[in-house]
Image (cartoon, rainbow, N blue to C red; front, top):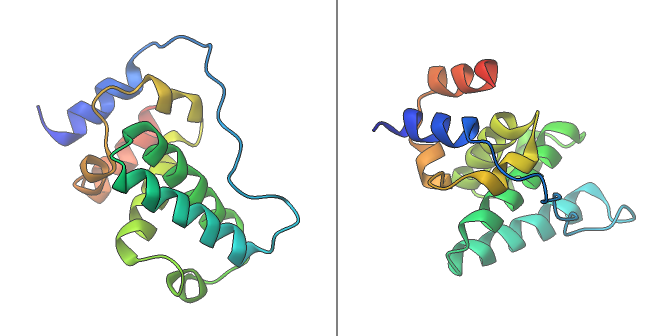
Length: 128
């Protein structure tokens, strides 16, 4: 199976609805840069510990912060590596309509998402 097919299969998997998206790793009182820094550190920790689901969740939150905040790409890139910047944005767009689906994935990893071509990302976002 191709990376696209693997991710698509995970997105179409019906999971149990007992999961709730965990809370963000930051508080609302923090400024945007601090929120991004804290979330990025949590993402790196989860990646080092090889925790697939938490990596996807923190990548989703980081992508959400990147896309919805007033910071420029340059400001964010001073905090986050280019690799995790692009992965987080991709994860956010793929799971934007249903972030709970992250918990139902079986094979999707950030590396798999990184290997997707831009047109495949667009297809996933439009199909789901």
